[in-house]
Image (cartoon, rainbow, N blue to C red; front, side, top):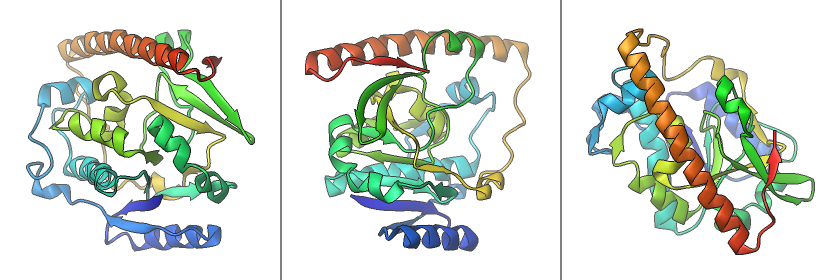
Length: 264
């Protein structure tokens, strides 16, 4: 399984640290030169749905760096399709945890079976109402590692492995840009790709992540009508999420795999 690290060509410090970590693990990888989003979206997306982007982010349009980040991941999903094999994708502000090399050494069959497996933490901030149900469900245990199905995937697309089949579904759903890539991945009912995660995680964010290459995204709309529309939009999304979850639970039962167990 090929490993790609998304990184700007000019990110010399991040590239040096990434190379050093991979060398310590004796893991082969390639840098993928991150897409420059300042040229616009036309080469990657048929358009930008600014209304949905506003409802998803409270910002009226994506920053060029967000376009470039999404396009970079999209390029690697297409790479998985063209190679006809899973790929492992890392953003360059990663920090490898003990056991990384051992886990990825046996990861490919699991990715082919489950499609999309996240390698960073399954925990993240959750809205109060979402805390009324589990964010993850245990699927399988093996050699000290547990695979969970994520009903409520956290943000960030720092580290994951994706199969060609899952990549096709993600590419198909990415014709129009309506959210940053990590928020897009949260919308499982739209791209129809279940998200799984390994625990304990073998990748976490490095201190480099404190200096974002995307820039400030704190300026958000305070218009009460926009916020009301956003609340309705998110409520509809949660309804669709529950429906998507039910389909996954039924497939799990029909396939003869172990039944889902609730996780925290």
